[in-house]
Length: 221
Length: 221
DNA sequence: GCCAATTTTTAGGCGTATCTAAAAATTATT
DNA sequence: AATAATTTTTAGATACGCCTAAAAATTGGC
Ligand SMILES: [Mn+2]
Ligand SMILES: [Mn+2]
Ligand SMILES: [Mn+2]
Ligand SMILES: [Mn+2]
Image (tube, rainbow over all chains, first blue to last red; front, side):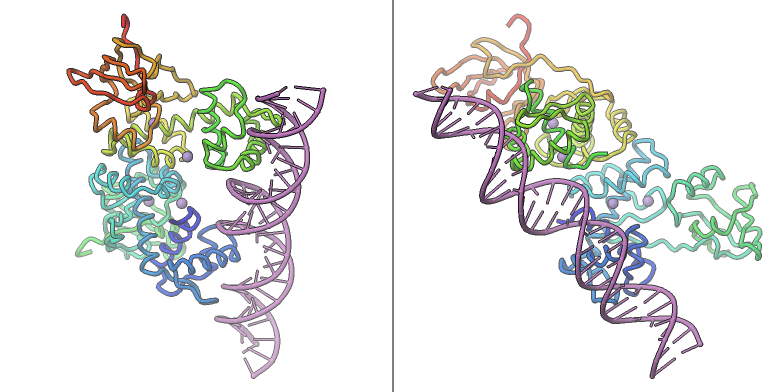
């Protein structure tokens, strides 16, 4: 059994591993966990003894296959609870994260699997992120950051890179939601801002926004 | 904000207060929490500083009205989650307690209240215990232990005194459930066992069983 | 009211998770 | 290759929640 703190570290390392495939640095973990590098060192030494990560001094860490399974099960719970909150309890997508951070640590395989059944085995959470199955497997959607699209390209909005309330509420305000088709009708080289078209509406967004929206490219675009 | 441990102490004191109305002793708390009296002393000193209990050395503790409200809100969450698990996720009444012990510590007023709404504002949990409202109020059902009933008396089974799996599974096996009408058709002075009648069926139960079942007496019985 | 039994508190210590400050190792720069 | 900058680890502290053993207070029997 793992403490809540250990689980949070495993989850952070899991998420950092999705980006860089090299060893995850102490600093990167410290930043993600909003803690100090020295605290991270303490913890990775403990996690290493428990065989959930590979760790050699000064060389960063990697999850063992065992550790990855544990991390995936926490992510599974987090995302299932997010679906529950939105679908059943009238939460909006910008309100669920904090609560799911707590619920993901509830230890009861029966609860997790019954919840999955109750929700109809959802494949994605409210932010478009994939929900791992019991074995920790999930499929990565083919997706690109909106910022990388060229002029004239279009695609479906399928996810967000930032799940902060601020960003999600901004999207609500701009009436951008998952599933919408977005077309790039202008790109400003100076500041990276983009002119978008969403179902007849046309408006512009900053580069920062474009770097936090995931798009699935439409074939032939 | 209170730690999980602090919340568990508050809940234990709350439950002990329902029985004895005098100061709750260090020993009683230690027994309920399966911990040592010295640990209890440490904690009650901390809780006293936080103004959630009244505490004077050697004189036991009592909840302040503030502390009682916090404790009631934890009990509220515990029982709402138990209802959720049974009604929505196919848990049986003997499986819910351990999971509810975890879920009761999730901090989100919106979650609690939306859950309450989702469940249709239940008044009792699966074991017949009352669910406090937002303000911490709840009504105590008029109920007596089955063991206190006299020969020929009858009533409705409305609760259990012991929520252990062993006991609840025994009740399932004997087909005794909340809502059933029970009539006492025999009492054995020697061992306190009782002969019961439940809808045409007649069988006998030990005194220990009779001391863990709550009955609402039928008027004119 | 006194002594013994019981209860409760205190003293001192341990493991977890965190921190700051200092030391050590690695990486980058000239 | 030497030095400077950065990263990482270690050393030493603190708060929490728990323990055992010992001391202090209360309670109960006579
Ligand atoms: Mn978490
Ligand atoms: Mn999410
Ligand atoms: Mn609990
Ligand atoms: Mn219950």
